[in-house]
Length: 184
Image (cartoon, rainbow, N blue to C red; front, side, top):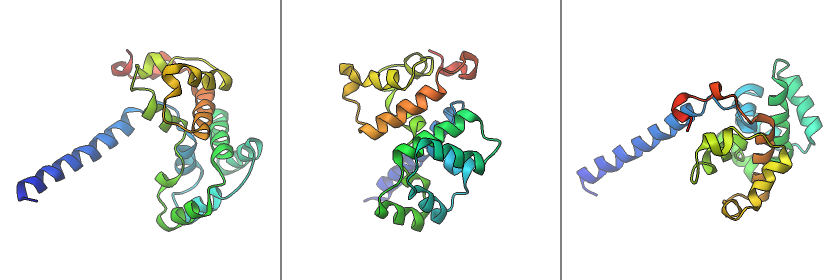
């Protein structure tokens, strides 16, 4: 690799990192998903603690109770958002928990509903009109995957359930909560 090629590769890499950070900031107006709540409001980003929590097997009610004990000031919808995420995605397999304990990297946790919406909903339509303004229950959100153009979205059943849980609890948003540049 020439010095010029190395410089170009570095610039492209840094641009990618900048774009990822900008994308996170762009969607701060959306309520956090389960992974975001776990690492941002419920526990410190400590690999051992995250690994231990991700190894628990509880139902939604038990997870919601745990979340409320961890953060009594937590909004009820946020507690339910986390509970749905955790009940669907935990316990993680032992190997995944070991990696999480060693690295402490929250990106090793499964994506949450917000992550999935940002990753998947913008390829074909506006996030605003195609997602953020829709009012559906979990069954309604799950039903979107039955249409031919949504059935090919690369998400497994747990991810679809995670997306539906998050969306039912957190959508629709109020129009004024969405930045003007994303209203289209």
